Structures are given as C-alpha cells and as structure tokens.
Image (cartoon, rainbow, N blue to C red):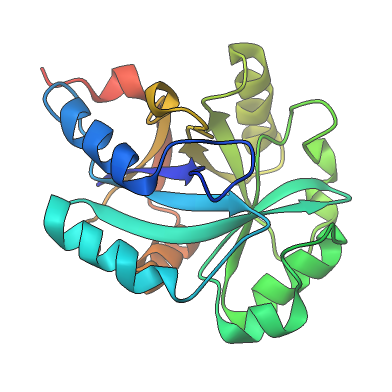
Amino acid sequence: MILDLHVHTDLSEDAKPTVVEYARWARELQDQYSVHGFVVTEHRYYSFSRNPVLAELSRETGLLILQGVELETDYGHILVYGVNPQFLDRVDVTVRLRGKDVAAAALETGAVAIPAHPCRPMLGCGPAVKDLPGVRIIEALNGANDRSENHQAESLVKSLDLLGVGGSDAHFITDFGLCMTHFDRNFSSERDLVAELLLGDYRPVYLEGTRHT
C-alpha cells in the first residue's frame, strides 16, 4: 500500500486545493502510478468532526483518506498521526509548541510524532531529533525539498538508526504524491496506520518509483 503522508488542503492557510480535488487527482495518477490514498496534515488544525467526512470520501473513491496534523515547534515542524482526545488535552495544536512536549504527549497517548523535512533549514530538527523522547521516525523524503535535503535526511536515518517515511508536503494539486510511503501491508484505518508506523515495515519512495511496468 502506497500513501502520501503529508498533504495540505484549503484548511491550511497556505494551500488552496480541497480534499476532494486531491482525491480526484490521486485517481488520475492511478492510471500510471501506484497511489492508494493520503493523509491530510493541516498546519495547526485538527478536527474529529472531519473524520467521518474523510471516511465517506474514502468509500466514494476507493482511496484511504485519513487525518493527521503538522505542528510548529522549537524543533521545527512535527507531523502527528493517531491524534486522540488525550493528545489534544495535552497539546494545543493552534500554537507554537515545545518539540519535547509534543513528542512526549504522542508517546504517552498512543500517537506517533514524526519530524517533517528534518534537514530543511529553519524548519527541521536535524540531528537534534535524537533529543525528542520516543521519536524514531523522520520524514526522509519530502516532495517540497530539493534532492540534497532529502539525501541529508536519508543519511540521518542511517546514522541515527531511524525509520523513514515519505510525503509530498503538497500545497498545490500537482505536488501531490511526489514523495510517498510504501507500506508492506494494506490497512484501512488511522489506528492501523499508527500500528504500521510503529512496526516499521515501510520505506519512502518517489512517485516515479511507483510507475506501472
């Protein structure tokens, strides 16, 4: 199963596409590439009421469409998957946060914290990821990075014995899917996504690497 784990819609202030528009584009890409779904990760926004809407769109399109969040911290941007009420009781996603607090809250409430674009200047944590409690996954491939930044992140995965995922960081339709994550197993829920991330049976991929042969 191949998912784009980092997508911004019109609910992020710096993006315009709707989730429906991304779903249509993903279906078009399926003619040439293996794309099975995506996770919307808005800046500073998460709403439980959105999940049934995404589930209905998943049923209509045959894609898996889930929700996470991208948070601003003193360790750069951090993606969180498996957001639950306990996590939101501890973390105000609308403000800039301490990265260690985000990581600890995710670890202790069953969510997964993944530093985004870790080797992007000013917005990534770099080697300081080792100081974030419980964090053992980083975004190794990011579609909005240049290849050198992704190469640095892949090197960080190896040097610190981490796991790596991929996401497009799309803010525009045509950026969708440029980087994704190839999971060894299929799954169908946010809970499953968290379980698979913790298991570690996946790898980051570029879109061109998923082209049908």
